[in-house]
Image (cartoon, rainbow, N blue to C red; front, side):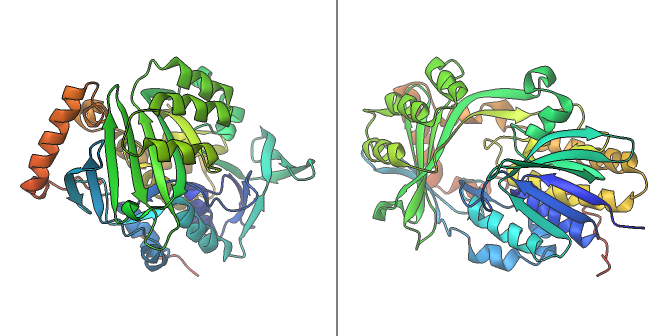
Length: 412
């Protein structure tokens, strides 16, 4: 019996992880990515819980450890750059044991999958249309460089193309129809700026009134750039919403610049470099919540199915775990795709629901980003007290829940 042929849309963390495990289970995999090469941009992310076990099974944990940012911890600073509190890496704080830039992780995962003869990457390629029959999915693939369109048949199609998934929209309908994007009332911009001495080795977090904040994080001791995260935790900011809806990057930068200009600390440096940044990304934070993650022979994984948002810190974990479980269930139920996809969802649904929960009933972002000067003073005073007495050590480490990976030997 010939191996099933599977198309994956998206070569990010979920897509490349899935390609690796499907190939290990002897599926034939084609993975299309709209970008011209593997994704090398993106913010810092962490790998925790079951995801660590999975990358270890893939034989890439040592390589990931070599690429970590080695961030020492996080400092809360005031407008004069004075440290109010410092929290060392690990445990409950911002900095986890394995911190890595998204681009570095994606490159490692891409190379791991690309080693297999069963995997073929096609860059600058998108899904133009798809049609499902009883036993196949007929897909039109468009090559962006020369606008050529080619129809191909696959046994399954997997959407691993993020929170605004085109695959999901083609098969299930628009986000508005599905009502699947749940707003978290926050907007965040990510980009890189030239590194300065004070950017290493700690992240620095500074708050401003009206629930605004800036976090500058190191990308590595030898890196020439640092990561910046600009946040606004209000759901009634019409200028940011209009800029996002317009899809105009320059308009988005200008809207954010107006919001942060004149606030002190390192905002002049940040705004100046933001206007020049080529890897600028702006997003209104949402969570993806779907009643079902598949329709017949098309299934979603990672952010496309259950994006938890950066506020949970669980996106990378769910992408890697979801890809592993989906490949496992497809391999176990080769003659019954319905059973495979139902089992994939049954095993993960409760874990995903818990991972999507934002601590303290969703109020953590608002506690970290007070509305008033008094609120900021109170936060910094409490943070200073907690840091001075090292009270975080007595709190339980909020590690991700355990998950039964049902590890089994895979024949070479």
